[in-house]
Image (cartoon, rainbow, N blue to C red; front, side, top):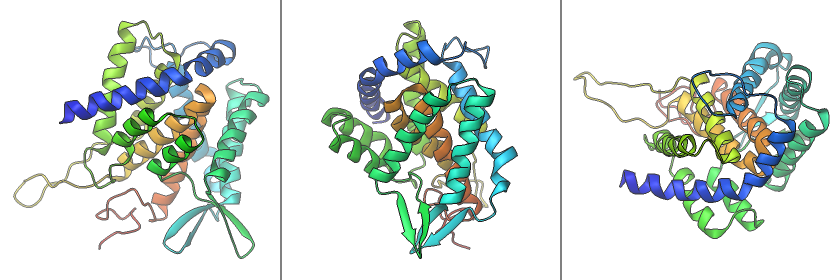
Length: 290
């Protein structure tokens, strides 16, 4: 069964990545800086995962505390305040332009496309004349929406559900994605990283997994393994992967930015104990059971 799921998901990713490949390859050949980062990898898009992690670190180190009112909870949903959302965007823009040397035009294009997705997908929320943003957490709904726009076909949509329709309580939620990335990486290595979009996703996903060290195991009194849902770090990786996959429709830079922003937002939710992805046994979950 696990092999079947892996192959089915791989079929989707191949469809998705090749449908986006022309966009991703054109963008990176024109705008991408030279490969850098993990010297153990031959992936020419390795620098994209490196930048993704740098964006997250930069936000946590230099921007996060600029805003004290970063979170709002209403009717069992959590939202990022518009002020906090704009602070995240500013963090991403400044780092990409001032530190990494991307042009302000290309960064703004990717950010504006991401922001339009948020608006069209209904993630903006107004209450008592204050504006908030519900950062992407409904992975299945996001790809239903992309299907409705004609940005993915029905077969790609069907296969994507193999990844993101699982509930976060499924202990294999992240490991299944990891299995697929392993297969993709082996394929790309054998083909000299010929598919730029696939290689971009691999790089961002691998680096996300590094920055959020994820396997956490728990045992009961008899030392038998207890199967939990997603732990906090796995939830961030899952959110990051979904953001990076959605962002691929706007090229490699879109994948970097969307993945980083969604993971930042999930981390904010966890800090405030309102994550909808984390299992109820963890204090970071909105359903935490004491």
